[in-house]
Length: 162
Image 1 (cartoon, helix red, strand yellow):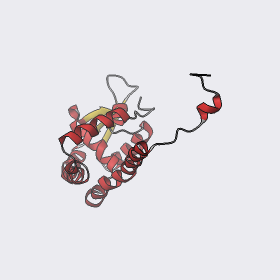
Image 2 (cartoon, one colour; image 1 turned 180 degrees about the vertical axis):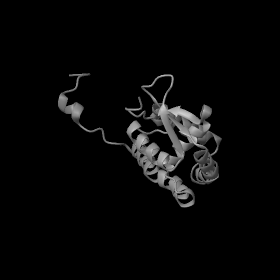
Image 3 (cartoon, helix red, strand yellow; image 1 turned 90 degrees about the vertical axis):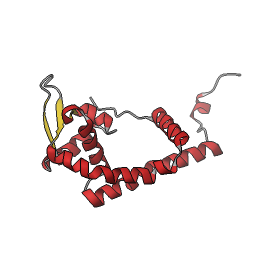
Image 4 (cartoon, one colour; image 1 turned 60 degrees about the vertical axis):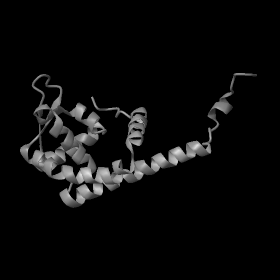
């Protein structure tokens, strides 16, 4: 029966070969350990989580320091529900203000306040040092291009960033 598979064969696991295992264990180690390495200095020096910093940073780079919540969730690589919780905390600290989008009231805008912008400016060098020390300084230009290519291929888009 050449070229056909039974249901039983299709449900059998495809075990990893040595090359695949090395790639997978390297990736999962990065996925699990890297956020903590990047977050630790932000927490110690500025009281920020990595996700909070990413949210504030993306807003700081947006026109008028304002983005729709769905776009911000996409840029920060988080779900809309996770973003909503973080923005609510940041709003309580005076770093972000939310308002209905005047162009379409179905959407909510997040705007970085002056206090939020000052915090991003203060935290950016800390984050940059951690990124360089933990990731970029260990890679040459070819490695950096390869990393960017692989990251793009593996990019996971949140389901609910609407």
